[in-house]
Length: 327
Image (cartoon, rainbow, N blue to C red; front, side):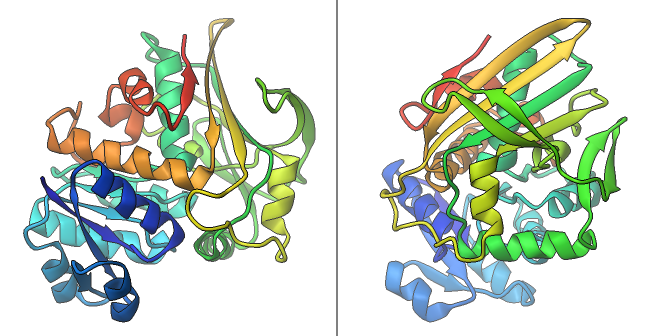
């Protein structure tokens, strides 16, 4: 089976991706900065730093694709994408950093090799749900993506990436309104959101912007994309004392992602339910690679999950990792 490089393989999400690749019959090649840690998890280790193009080229030599799980993606995405383009192989990452994703779409708009950013729980999953909900619609008046998490134990990588994004926007908040990203200082507001079970009615923070504000408008003609986060999860994320997630397969976390699209007074909905946001990122990223290598992509170059793949079919293929309800 094809060899796939996992850059950032020693991280929490990276280990999930390596395991998922092996389970699906791929040959994972582990890469990243720390040679000793890489060697401790695999005999197929190719150390490489993002500031060493030659090492990145050697890491990708002979591989069929690369999955970048190493944040902050503001630092890693560009160099690894460039290496993938030189090698002529598909690139997939799991970036949730809004600014890094926006840069990927802008900087690689002319790429011919597939580049799929944000192919993760934040960004990819929401984009697939939005696209499936749209169905035959080509435009929408509004998109809403509500993240219902009963808790959030962020990884060290999540915290570092969050700080990078926070610093890049000088502490301001961001939203997608009137067809563009807007940076603002408005205070957060809360409201009720009725999720499906097992969460039910929860308080959410409005305009808690995630990668969907970049991925969805990249291919959907919509003026407003709003994302919401349960207060419990946002509180966990903001608390520096919240512990990191437990080892693979043991996270006690439940999520419901509720997507609402509206056009001309008509509303459509799509929902995904599951456990462990980091664990579910692995099948999302690996299924993307499988489809790219199988020639099941709908376009070429840089594209979000919903633009690159048949969204409804992709989502249904993720069972038992996800339970989905589509229009």
